[in-house]
Image (cartoon, rainbow, N blue to C red; front, side, top):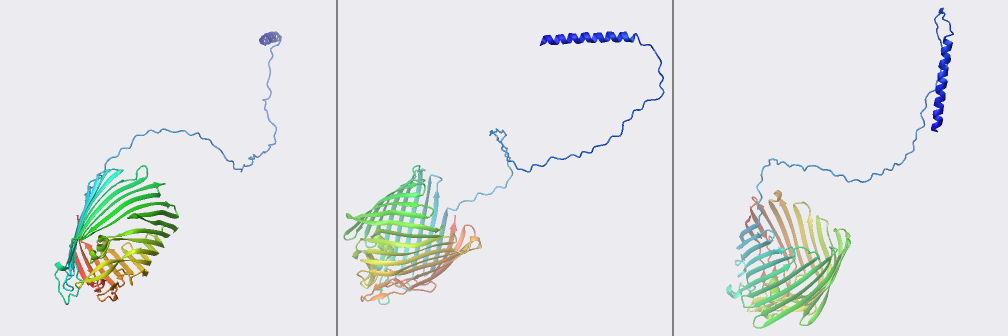
Length: 545
């Protein structure tokens, strides 16, 4: 291929050279002549026809096409300097000191005094506690001889948190109460205060070891020993001891498996000794869902090698959130009747003619409850059978009325309800009513000393941005059945007690209160031959610090 190119190039060079040679020879033959120009040359083009061709756009493509873009992820590293915060001058505010203590003191008519004080003991994250004392006394001897009393209560409580898994609690309590057996015909006889005096002194000691927060195993535990000693003016003495060990295992943070073991021992001593010892084993499992709550368990009680088995079950159904909930259940227990329970329910009780005994209580119930925020309510119907239920029979020794316990099996059909209504932010109404429709003792003619109807209704109204509050309460109860000195069955009068009161704080720390009780001067006898105090009032001051 290279050879052909060279050959063609040589041939072209020879041809060009020959043409130049021939042209030079012709030039030598042309003769030189003059040329005259007669007219200048003017070139013109003929008229042309213009062809008009208008432009046309191509048709538009109106079809929508989906475009797919693939953008590979790529982390970006952005480096920037941290912002600099510059302080701005602000007016300092004095730190508000917490109010840990309070004092309440007052006096009234008939001759009465009230003194109460408490203080919260805070020691950071490791310790907290409280100390509290209350005194209340009243003397209405101008109306009824020896109708007077005083109550003194003291409490010291503290918690020490070792760590989040272990905490300890200690509690010391003491109460000293004095009352008088004024249930006699004081119009025809006179008795000194010492001859009808009764004192109750109770020491309470308790402790607890428990976990402050739920641990990694989702188990809460508690070990709580308690002991008390009661003595009265007549050298009666009672000691009680219980040791409660309980644990709760949580599943899925809402289902609870619980078990509790509690020995409960009581010893009473006067001229002879009585003992009442029970051991309780209480396992249960509670299942929670958005609609259903189901608890299944039992209460196994041993007393003198005799086992009693009770159900502990409840089914709850959420019909409309928290607003409407239906429930039904069955429960039971052996309830101890001790000198302490007797005297707390009836301070005019005579223990030496009474025996300590368990009451077997089987209970079945169903009802409705709910909470709408502004309305909180609960209502239920129940049937119970109480075997060896304590009834309070009046006795008359030396014309002095006292009460002893007699036991009977009683069937009870009950309806009860509670309601709390918050009409306004400042106004709250409350009400509780319990009605025993059927009180059917097996042997006794009437349920001595036990009410069939009890009600408590109240209203609290807060004004002046919380600086003042007004309250009103109404208490109702039916007459109590009893036997009089001639063994005639009688029913006492009904109770209707209307009370009002209020409080006002002059500043953050100092305030005043006024309470007017039993406005209608109802002198109903809750216990036979023991009329209550009529209209009375009390006023005083309060302080917070």
